[in-house]
Image 1 (spheres, rainbow, N blue to C red):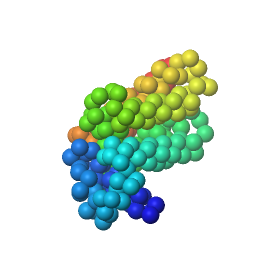
Image 2 (cartoon, one colour):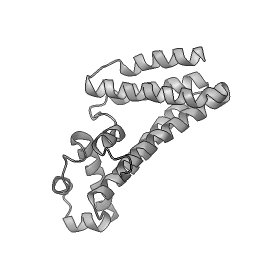
Image 3 (cartoon, helix red, strand yellow):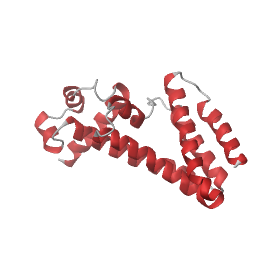
Image 4 (cartoon, rainbow, N blue to C red):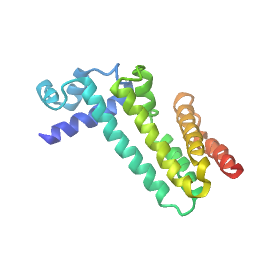
Length: 183
């Protein structure tokens, strides 16, 4: 039965990424996953619970993959550059549909919503990770720089998604490099 749970989560992730959280209904997820409604509610008492699980899985994949790319580099500068390179590669994928966390926060406006809170937590974890890269070299200014770099990454995501900007990650990296060199 755990396979059906994973199938539901995987199909929901794909459909939510393509069509949004509110626009994609439970019936469509069930039909495309080939799973009965009873099975869905056995694992997820509500659509919110399913969305939270999808975001949990996406967060795990996203951060694990992003961190592996940066951690494979040796210097602070090349680690930060790897974050932008990773995003550039993501933007070129056929299944790129923007950031599931930005999209979730946009659809679930209430900052107390568990979905909005999870989206915010994902972004905070990214900032924490970037700060960890910067800490030794940039000390007290590392948190501010991490927030700025995350803003550049999120801006690149939006530019790539909304207007199809093909050089969004490279352009954002140019700005980030200038920030780091000026600090």
